[in-house]
Length: 524
Ligand SMILES: Cc1cc2nc3c(=O)[nH]c(=O)nc-3n(C[C@H](O)[C@H](O)[C@H](O)COP(=O)(O)OP(=O)(O)OC[C@H]3O[C@@H](n4cnc5c(N)ncnc54)[C@H](O)[C@@H]3O)c2cc1C
Ligand SMILES: *[C@@H]1O[C@H](CO)[C@@H](O)[C@H](O)[C@H]1NC(C)=O
Ligand SMILES: *[C@@H]1O[C@H](CO)[C@@H](O)[C@H](O)[C@H]1NC(C)=O
Ligand SMILES: *[C@@H]1O[C@H](CO)[C@@H](O)[C@H](O)[C@H]1NC(C)=O
Ligand SMILES: *[C@@H]1O[C@H](CO)[C@@H](O)[C@H](O)[C@H]1NC(C)=O
Image (cartoon, rainbow, N blue to C red; front, side):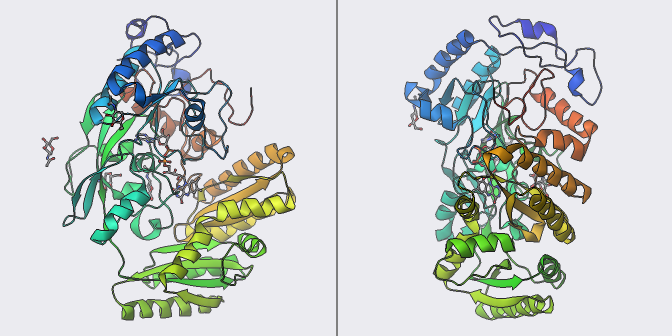
């Protein structure tokens, strides 16, 4: 049980933060107003003692206080959710082993220093904004494959390996890892955000691809969630508890991941549509007819207009209509041909046109590049129209059949508010990223509309986050609307059961500080 006594053991704490659960409260659900026991984080003087201890663990070479490292570990470079002026870590630590991570966290636990895990830094909802300062633990030095079990189709890796690097190492073995989020994302971050990407339609997201984890808990204890066998009926699914937990429960220090055989033959089929409903009906018809695509991506007509007008699509002639990109994989040329035939006929029956198929590897890479770089392409396009333009990516997910309704409602609102917007997404999963383009004076309007879009997604039986996560943005409030106070309160109870001192990435996913005034977008 959490008691006041345990808090007062440490001297030199800063004033003002209220973290902890009322000792007499034994309800299942922890509401924000239940958190009334004052718990304070370490003052700078105490943090400095901690840093000295940590330097004895990792060596001075593996601690940085350089301005560059401090800035890059405070907020994502695109500034979608900028940190406030005081939201900077005291230092960035680069451990090399599980034991070092455990020892570092133990020091932070003893001194009440917040710990912010950091992998590739590509998350975009302010996931590693150090709201209570603290120490950033960067896992990127732990970037090795530890064991490859080809016969079992699994691999044991350290958390700081990039998914693209992992795939490089797997390719000679004819194997691949499923999830494909932003280039630069690392396994620890991918697991902690339950990330996915274009491949999720076939291979699932992070959740479907983690067999077992080794985790350092808030007090430094090292646990393994299970052994390597695929199946298990062995109590609580602790592996799943850490998937999508955004560093709020512990640090993932090792992961056993599922692998797949690389498709022997691949092709990308492309098709235009005038009507978005025709495009999504094509998606559902493909599924119903058992045509198993490895990915189905949608780029809307606004997005395609940006590609056409920017000439950013290479030598291929693109047209400004909704586009479906379908990645097809098969074991032989003949079965691939069969698939292409089915895709073409299903698309045509839904008024698809400009059907084409690319089998050559370079051509396929070029096409996929257009998809993977659309965020930057949309921004460059917007800057030609509105030179001061910024962009905000969004990430709602609805049942596939509701996608047309979602997009038409959202785009109508954008047009009315005079905001430019393009859309693209993982159509196979009903996961769409509307990119909202705004000028500085449209900042508030853009955020208001994005929140309205999230509410539309909830109404359509969907979610405010398909794959990016919650972080410290407005999505924390929206998550309460989506899941309800009691569900969030249950998450909060789990948080405090495992992290009584509230040191693990505080304030992320849901609030734990009733005195918090933070709105993500208003500056000091
Ligand atoms: C251009 C672009 C495209 C993107 N496309 C996609 C996409 O298609 N699909 C998708 O799912 N996402 C996408 N994202 C979002 C992003 O790539 C993912 O959220 C990714 O999983 C983040 O991984 P990371 O290693 O960069 O994590 P980070 O940004 O370093 O951290 C993410 C969160 O996880 C925590 N964390 C990091 N490492 C650990 C660890 N070892 N243990 C515990 N907690 C940890 C951090 O504290 C933080 O809360 C995109 C982002 C960009 C910028
Ligand atoms: C510092 O990090 C490097 C790279 O991971 C590692 O080789 C070295 O051993 C580390 N130093 C200590 C003292 O652990
Ligand atoms: C993780 O994502 C998968 C889809 O990729 C989804 O089915 C699952 O519910 C998500 N899990 C969590 C814990 O968010
Ligand atoms: C299985 O888990 C147990 C308990 O953690 C451990 O002792 C054992 O070594 C594990 N087996 C393997 C092969 O890792
Ligand atoms: C436990 O969770 C992991 C990771 O989310 C998942 O892959 C696995 O299928 C789950 N296992 C069971 C038995 O539900």
